[in-house]
Length: 422
Image 1 (spheres, rainbow, N blue to C red):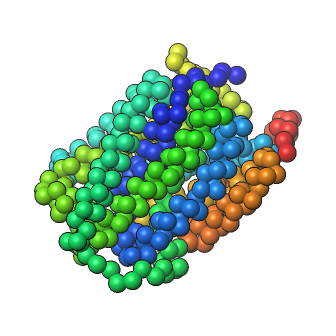
Image 2 (cartoon, rainbow, N blue to C red):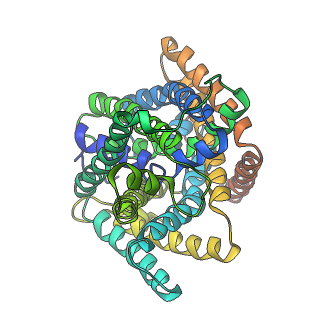
């Protein structure tokens, strides 16, 4: 079997993860959580960051011990068998059908704050974005990692700079009576804010491309989660204390920039918001392509998708995922699904994947790590409850895939199943 090129170090891996975690959410999700929960949004962010650490720890240990392009799919396969692993793989691929359209719409919103586009211009721009992402990804993950790092840390610097400016101007900000946490609002905040931590599983797909996965992969994962949590929390604090949210037509980050800096917020936030969305879409394209490549190597899809180009990139898989992404953008636009619906549907699918992965961690990792894996599982059950109806969508996807996999197994009785490793 062909092997992926090991081209990632700690800094590049950290840049990829931070760009995936900040991505589309950094200029939007803090506002959504403050609108929904007010001052309780800050408690929600603090609880979510602490709660997500056991999940990140489990992924870090699995990626350290079992570096593989299949990521969560590979871990679940080792723990529970080939069928369950393939189901997880297809869930992650199906995630693109709701995640990428949401990110694309956000990117176009930011772009249109800079340049007015008609319907034809929007379509051409979407096609152009996909083409640029394909061109970047077929040149190798190292090129992508360097670009992602620049974008990620630039976006983080903008939010941290605004938060620092807001802190210095705190006396002129709005005050809030009391800060007693409302646990109902904390759960509602977490259901939305969890979108910001969809990205942990994407780095797992790239674990096989770290030069030193046993050291750099877990370090990049844990540092990335904490860094992103800090940026989101500070951004939410700045919006809470310095922005009046009565007008929903103008993004809060634009109003914050205009209040603190004095104008040009739409242009400045538009540029960085667009780059942030682009960075997220780029890393998801890379990770899902490697998931598809892994399935091709296992014989679940055409072996032609397992071919690598001269720089060790699964170029055919990248092209296949790009075509599927284009179809999903067109379909979700035709169905007129709202951004909140897309976010919750994506969150439900990822919560299910995380639950199965934490179950795999209990089977595969040493006994001393079990308490954190069990705690992570409890966190995911809480998130599943908070996500609500969207969890039913995720379960429906799982059931349909399980039926299809069973039917495929019955049609190929001579195929030998993979040995289960416990």
